[in-house]
Length: 243
Length: 316
Image (tube, rainbow over all chains, first blue to last red):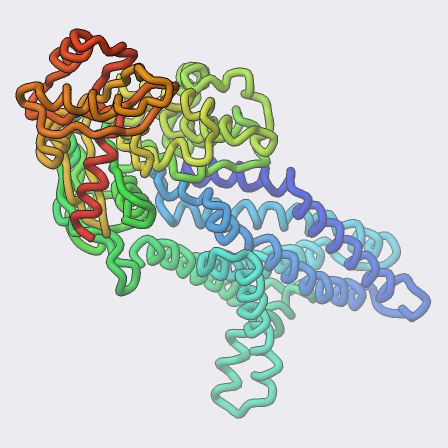
């Protein structure tokens, strides 16, 4: 556990001292603000129920969270391999699992901080309309869980290559495919449709969070995706030592 | 202390190392000598448990490095050819991270960090960002992270790679200091480096150990004798005839098997005298009695070079 904490602290420090961390935060917050303005405050927004505006906010923010998660996570192992700094961790008495988990947690913590900075938008809705703290809280829990799953996929992509750009491409492709499972599930015949919809990273599993309905199966889904891809990343790390 | 047996590493279907077997005693400084691409780095990475072997065994003390690499890594400090430095960190922060990741607690870090910074002469760079350091200082920081946790086994892969002559001298001085407390493995294709710092030499070629022993052992076995390098002042302005005169004189010494002219250095004629046993005193006496001005007499610095070339060329 101590090794995880040490790696977590170093990685989080790297995000806070790197340009990349601030660029990701700035771009995400800017785009989210602009989209919110367009949907809720701008001239084209029209009249809507507060809860619909909040649902729309969580929908758009989830897309941005997924993109930010890919950018933040896919450099984690690939960049270390490229810069040949991973050898420090690989020759220390640290297990591959601890390396993967430490890095994953740092990316998740940074993403959670960025995401929490968007809270002024739901607060504006609360001031001007009627939404519950419950819906806001559940929505943010969904964003963190979605971010967690996407970061785990990104860490896995990052464990496969020494090129950060290729890792970003792979991560985006994996996440994109898992997003596409939902629309695909709507058009393909039963029973495959059920499988695809069940595996989709957005759609069925995130809809509940958008409207403030917390369902255990959705939480379990995101935790399972996170666990699965972190396990895959650990196995890929171990395999690299043998190949 | 370290015993490798049939250690082999394949990268896909290509054999990079092995099978190699060797033993290293506690407190020795061992040089892995070989041309570029013969498997030195791969072998060191296997010993450092960065890579897992395709076959064979590796024991350090009583720890099985193949079955329990996690435990073995506690005993090892590794400086790869390119130091694993996080450039955005300060030297102090980086070394603290390196110590913590190797299991050191805060008390150990407080005691050990200033000492290691002093040994590697980076105390005054403690607060500097690594990105702003010169190549030589980066190498020292890399060395500091490798010795910070006081490992039993210190592995240095080409520690003077890319350094200027002044930095090389400084790094060698640091290594000499480290030899007193650690078993050190050094890889290099730089013959003087190995010759000046190592007690034992393992010569690698095509992933295999083709010779092992002290420099004297290797020279004795392969060069069949002792080598003395002597510099003599020429009598004539252009040295015409002097080379043959000196050569003839030296050949008369009993036990001398070969005398070879090596050209001139600093205005003196240089000869390498090969004999079955040490004939340095006879060489000096004969030359002085013959009226030649001897300005330098020492064991040949090119001994290891000759051994190395003999080994590698012999195989090819």
